[in-house]
Length: 324
Ligand SMILES: [Fe+2]
Ligand SMILES: [Fe+2]
Ligand SMILES: [Fe+2]
Image (cartoon, rainbow, N blue to C red; front, top):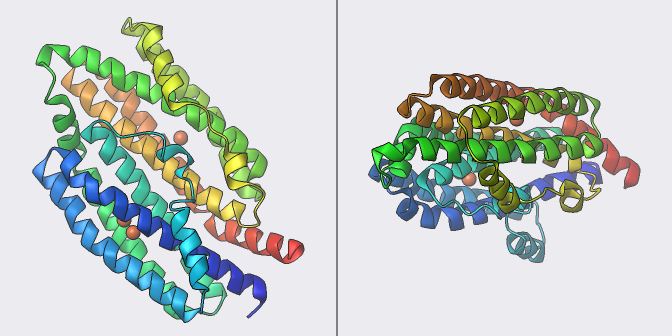
C-alpha cells in the first residue's frame, strides 16, 4: 500500500476517533438540556451507540498499529474537524441543541463516508465495513432528531407566553440571518481553499443562492417591523468565520472541508425547519413558506456537496502524493 494511502487512512481514523470523543462529551449533557422526555431518550440511546463506535474505531486504529500518542493528540484536539463554528455557539434552547446535534450527526455521517472511501482505496475492507455501519447509525440518529423538530420547538417555546410568539419568531428570523452571514463567509473562503473544481463550483453556485436566501430573510424581518438592532447583536455574538486558519493548507483539506460544509448545510436545514414551525404557530404564512423553500435549497446543496466526496478524497490523495 502506498504510504500516502496508509497515512490518509490513519489520519481519517484518528479524526473520527476524536469526533466520537467529543460526541460523547456533548451527549452526556444533552438529555438534561433537551427538556423533553422523548428527545432525552433519543440522546441517551445514542450515548450507548457512540461508546461502541469509539471502541470500534479504536480497534481499527490498533489494527493499523497507530502510535498511541497520536491517538492521545487526537483526543486532545477533540473535534478538530469543523468545530470552528459549533464550539462557540452554546445551545441555550432545546431547539438549538437539536439543531446542533442534527448538524453534528451529519458531520459524523460525512466523516465515516469519507473514511469508507479512503479505506476501500487502501484495500482495507474491514475498516470500510465498520465505517459504513457507523455511518448508517449516525444517519438513523439524525432522522430521530429530525422527527423531534416539533418537540424541540414546543420545548423551546413552552416557557414563553402565547402572546409572545411574534417576538420569538423575530428571534428565529434574526438567527437565520446570522447563519446566512456565516454561510456566506464559509462559501467565500471555501471556494478559495477547496482545491477540487467540482466542489468549488458547488460552493460558488450556492454562494449566489445564499445571498438570495439572506435577502429573503431580511425582507421578512423588515416586513415584520423588527428592530435591526436585534439581528445586529446576534451577528456580533456568532462572530466571524476563519476557515483558512482552521483547515490550514493541509493535503486533506478538500475532504475535510466537504464534510464540514455538508454538516453546515444541515445546521441550516434544522434552523429553517424550526423557523417554519414557529412561523406556522405565529400565523405568519409568508415566513413559513420561505423557510420551507430555503430548507429544500439547503438539502439540495448538501446533496451536491456529498456528490463531491469521492473527488475530494481523490484530490486530497494526489495533493499528498505531490507534497509527500
Ligand atoms: Fe458517532
Ligand atoms: Fe452520532
Ligand atoms: Fe446553505
